[in-house]
Length: 529
Image 1 (cartoon, rainbow, N blue to C red):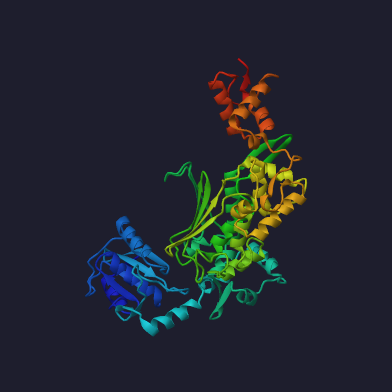
Image 2: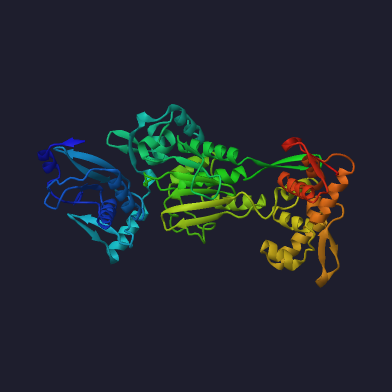
């Protein structure tokens, strides 16, 4: 952008409700200006202009942009902002354009709520602050004008939305307005932010980083070995990101007897719901940040911009109901990509428990981001999960009873007190759980009344790896070798161990001189000395 000194002086004659002048990028002053403009009607910060309006210059270098971003990151919930360089008679001025927040309000790092009044950034206090917060709490950003006319809508996406809402063709502008996807602006119809997210092929070109970034980490370090950007309409992002992550995670392959089990390392329903939640509830006012998914060796981490919407907290997240972008959530719900409001967290927690994985965690990072951690491992091994599936072929059991069955298969004698500890239930529910397993023939009752215990039924055969100590497993493998060469696959079939565990025991026997290995890798066989 280029302006003459005369035009610049005319356009920005003085500081006012919309214009703030700064000589440099002092963090505190930039932060205050961003907060005040965000909470008012927006405006510009001119960096490289003194208080009298003289252009002294300050190029939009990488260091300048970093300083501005750092100041903005210190702000709680700032409005959208953009950084430009303006040449005024060949002298570079950095311009920060700040947009008005339509949802919620911005605060400085020390908690002040500022508004723009003339040339000053003024803090609100008392009743004035209460009225301001109440007014802003009623507004939602996803229903605001995105500045895109309805002509930009993709026809295929529009037809998909029409069918999802059950509208007769064609999908008229008034229907889109009624659904919160469009808004009347004078004689034109514009898309809202929600409409842009769901009806444009590339919403990120209009709304900033409205996409999902996936990073794969080979270990716990900071260096990733693969990066993917999932762009497109919100509904496609949910589908494509879920598919990509599921393929990257793969499955745990378990061979038990004659059966082969391929167990997803994470339930697809859990992953899809967690990603849909991030897309529906993230702050789209933060144009400089995308949703970020980190693939770690033992977990999937999903980071979305913006804190938990009030009144949701980490403690009441399962019970409280609130949506930052209700229109986006409604579109995903109608496309069967998300649960009803208030059900998403329930599904994630319940399905993780049913899959015998460690529970997910939900964290609000100081109102800046929400982090969801989905463990892909748990105290229950893949072999145990496969065995439970095999047992369930003989009779249905409740998901909550699976942990008890595994503990019994590990050789533990179950008591009412132990069940209360495992399941975190009261005495009555513990008693009913034990009775269900007994009546299904999965456990046997030993003793009566106060001395009652329950053990795994003799009719069920737990995998050898459940029942045997390490020495017993070694003895079993040596006995197998007496009948001929032993392979890793044969050990897995007979013991229930997974490939890594079987290899560990075989290597130990070779080290002890009890077996000799011939061949390499998948062709390796083990024979007696």
